Image (cartoon, rainbow, N blue to C red; front, top):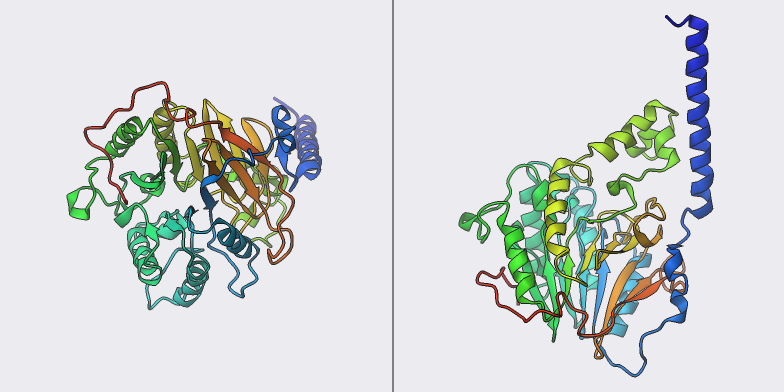
Length: 423
C-alpha cells in the first residue's frame, strides 16, 4: 500500500505533468490564435483567380449566427453584408444559416426579452431588403436552445420574418424535417435542411397533421437521397445549421482557458481556476456532449445518416453555421463549410481534415460563373464597423466546370417521391 509520502509525490507529478501540458497548449494556441490556418497543400491559393472573361451566373452569401448583431447601425458584419448586397444585385441569394436571435430566439410578446429580440431581428430584416433572394434557416437558439417549448419559438420567428420581410423564405416551413429545394439559377440548386429537428426536445412536427410530408425520422434522409439523385445534372448547395465537420467547440475542440477556467462557459468573467477538475467539462463535451455537440447521440446519428447520403454525390457543397468561426473542409469529394461568425467569434483549431480555419467575424460567399466554375470567397470586416473590407484571407475554386456536379458521369434520373419545393 503506498505511503502518504509516495501518494504525495504521485499527485505532485500528475499535477506537474498537467500544468506542463496546459502551458504547452497555451503556447501553441498563442502562436496561431485568430490567425488564418491554411493547409500546406493550398498555400499557393493567392496565385489562383477566377477567369475574368467568364460572367457571373449567380452569387450566394452564407451568413450564420447573426443573433447578437449590434443594433446601433455599426455592426461590422451587417455593414460588410450590405456592401456585398450592393455589388451582387438581383442575381444573388443570401442564406441566413440559423441562430438568428440570441439567446433564445423570439419570445412571446409578453416576455421581458421580446423587445430586444425584435430589435436584433428587425435590423437584419432591414439590411436584407434588396432585389435578390433571401432564405432563412433556424438554429438551436431559434428553438429556445432546444428546450421542450422550442417549436412555439420557431413558429413565432417564422411568422415574424414572413410578416416583416414577405419576400424572404423561411425554410423548411413549419419546422418540418423535409428537405426543401430552391432553384437559384440554371443548373444551380439550393437544398435546405432542418438539422435542429433531430436534436430538439419536446414537439417536433411530423406528418400531415403539421403539414409535413415525412412521417418518421428516417424519411427525410430518404427524401434527400431521392432529391440528390434526381438532380445529378445540377450543381448543388446544401444548407443546414449544424456542421458535419468542425475543428471548434461543437466538434470537441476547447481552449486552455476552458480547461483551467471552466466556469467561463457559464459566465465570461467567472475566472475561478480549476485545473484538472476543469478538464472534465471539455472531456465530457468531447465524448458525450450536449445536444448541440457532435458527440451527443442525437447529433451523431443525424450526422452519420447525412454523411452516408452526401458522400454518394461528389462535389456537393454543404454549408452550416453553429460554430462561431470560418472553416472549410475538402473531404471525400465534398466541400464542407462552417460560416458561423456573423456576430460572435470563438476558438477554432488548425490542422486535421481542415483546409482553412479562421477565428474572425465574417462570412463565406460562393460565386458561380457561366463557364461552370464555382469559387469560395472569404469576406471579413477590416475595421470595427465593417465599412472597410479586410484583405481576403482565403479563396478556392470548388468546382471547375458544369461537369463538376454531383455524379456527373451518371444519366439524370427522376425521383418517384421528390422532397417538397419552395419554388
